[in-house]
Amino acid sequence: MKDAQNGRQAAIDVARALGLLLVYYGHFVEQIMYLKNPAAAVQYKWIYSFHMILFFILSGWVKGARPSVPTAIKFVQSTLASRIVPYLFFSIVLAGLSLVFTGWFPMLDLSSAQGYFQAGVSTVLGFPLFNVPLWFVACLVSVECLHRLVQAYLDSTVRIIAVAVVCYVGGYLLNEHYFFFGQNMSFWLLHEVPVVYAFFLVGVLLGRGGLPGRISPAAGVAIFALALAAVHFTYDLNQGPFRYLQAVIILLSGHGHFLWFPFTALAGSVMVLALGRVLHNVSLLAFFGRNAIILLGLNGVFYHFVNAPVAAWSVANLPPDGWSVFFVSALVTLVSFGLSLPVIYGLNIAVPQLVGKPRTAGRFFGPLIKG
Image (cartoon, rainbow, N blue to C red):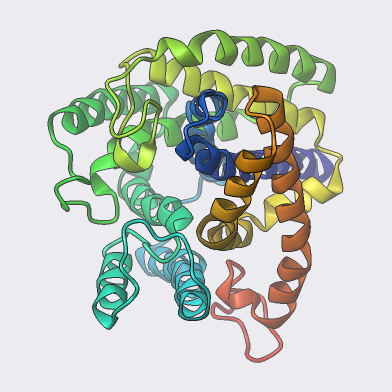
């Protein structure tokens, strides 16, 4: 029984790592897209059609597989230690790096103390301008707070599905009528919570049902192929309305079409989950998945300081076709993961309490949460 549970968790860890590979890839190809490369724009739209929804489904899976309702005190304690602390830690690290290195901060003027103050205030309000990839952590905090409030009432599949449908429809309509982000009305992305909570509940159902662990690797290959085809043939059917860029951007509540958005998002998530099941024995991927919050925080380093100049070099020196964009983006992604590996080990030894492992003692002080 324990081995089966470990196998299911390994599949989720691997899926999480695969999702992070897409995050790293997507953030690099984004920079090539900004340099007027149409092939990069196509790849960007493909990845963004599902990759962030995947992480909400994976987060919901954890809650579904472990359905106990924590006390309010334990929930607050766990949220502060395992979510807020890493969020602040990696934001502060990037703020420090920005004092030494010139980075890509398009929404900030870091030439003055006022810029740093504004970025600090924005971070406290749930939009981490020093480390933009951490927006997911901010949104997840809000999602998990909502789930803690309603979790006890979600005692049947019918109720979960009903709440998911109501949340999606209501959240979609709300964000179509009001652009909270553009009007500086975003607070810990609460306006986006109903939409992504619908997908979080999909993950809860999967976790309760023991999926994808209950499917065989052979079935996983078939499901992966079918889901891949579904993404390929539907991602561009979503023609908006979008915001700023012609792609799904959850941070901006730019979902696009009411039906094609969830269809492709679910298909892409199933694709990665199935591949996670197929590759669940790949220990390196499982390791990366178990350290997802570190990888997400470190992605800020590449997002703000590395990707833009490397993308500019690639555009100036490589052909603009899709395969060239793919190979350079894949290479940068793999190198970024490789460079992150020793940093992950170092942080886990020195300060695991600050990077998502609050119950682990580090080199300098003890655990943030005992017991």
